[in-house]
Length: 284
Image (tube, rainbow, N blue to C red; front, side, top):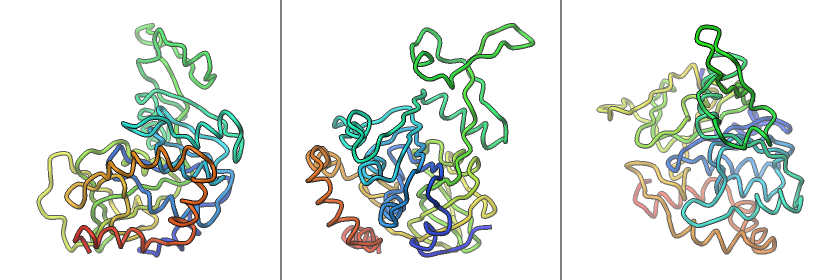
């Protein structure tokens, strides 16, 4: 059952060294505030799971949190490479990083299999491609009814699932709407969950057709962090900060500039940086 907590306490209680951690959000509602607290608490040896590891995982990898990444695309969207991820893979800095690459479809199906407590996912995919040659976890099974050969991938069952959402009500139910990726599936597949939200409301009121409500019993901790997905966006609250994604390319390209930025903007700050951002936008 969901418990309202402060950020530092939620991360300390739910994220442990050596855990597999899924932090999902597809362009929209990326849980940056939570990722920064993981960095501040210097969590180590994490397996990071995410369909699209972009800036938040670039930061976590560069700060030495990760030993493995399970993903289906990695980069700075619309800009170029994630330089800290590349440095870890190519040069082992700050740690050697193991990679397990999948397709988007395989990741989505693997989360669904984990949510259903199944051992693996079955999908039509990986036909005529080379990824199975470098990822031995991609296998196949023959359908006992039709004889069709189908691809399989292991179910994803993260130790911790972390997402950012728009609103929670006072009973601990959580609302997402707008562009959603596989946040619901990641939460349901995870053993422990943290959801950061923009605000707490009495009622969710009118909702769009694609709205998702996660009931309180699926969530471990809820943390109220206005602006908590910046520089990504939260529909109805603030826009994507495209200028930051562009700036990150230069900040992260060299180790020294990266470390200096992280020290000033993450290690020496707390979630107030996100609250300050929200105030600038008139949201808090």
